[in-house]
Structures are given as structure tokens and as C-alpha cells.
Amino acid sequence: MSTREIVVLTDVALITASVQRGMADEIVKAAQEAGAQGASIHYAHGRGVRERLGILGLAVEAEKEVINIVVSTDQVDRVFEKMYLAGKMDTPGMGFMWVTPLEKAATFVPPEIVERLTRKPNRANG
Image (cartoon, rainbow, N blue to C red; front, side, top):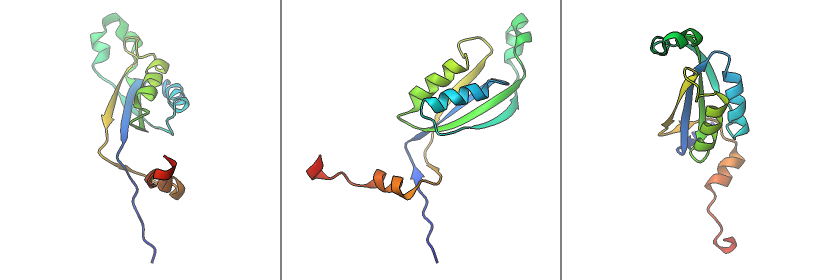
């Protein structure tokens, strides 16, 4: 009987962005260029911003794309910034982003990567 082992990642964070419909592909591409491995995208219906923007509210679509990307904590700032810029988040009504620290996450990690990450540094080699 084979044993199954869970590889738990503890130094990861979740970047979530709720953006205008049609923007997700461009934002995910920018995130991948910054080092993210992939993304999950789903659709949502937004409320609230349209009413507060007055006349500009006509340009804010209610249909949203929500992007979820898990990255290592050392990649968070770089990926977050690239996503922000690609999504034009500095424009009113374009979207909202946030980062959630994750206590733990699990997925398949190739054995050679696990070995490299868990190997003790050789004191003779520095």
C-alpha cells in the first residue's frame, strides 16, 4: 500500500482582484510575467460603486471578473503591483484588489522541488 504525503505550503498569500469584465486575461498575463504560476477566474455581479460614482456610474459595468492568485510571500508585492497597473486600478470604478495571508495551502509539488526546499544547507559549502 502506498503512502500519500501532503506538502503544506506556509509562506504563501492570496491576491484577489475584482475587476471590470474583460480585464482578467490582461491582468493574469501581467501577474504571470511577474512570476505567478496561474490564476482562477470567476464571474460576479458588483453593487454599490455604480451608485456612488453618479454620472460616471454609467461606465461602470455591474458584471465583474474575480481573479484569485496564490503566490509565495516574497512575490506578493511584485505581482500585486503588476496586476494593479495592468488593471488600471488607479482609475475610478476599474476594480479593487486585496491580499490575504494564508495559514497553509496544499497542492502537488514535484519531489525534486520538495527535496531542494527541505535540504539542510551544507555547512562546508556555505
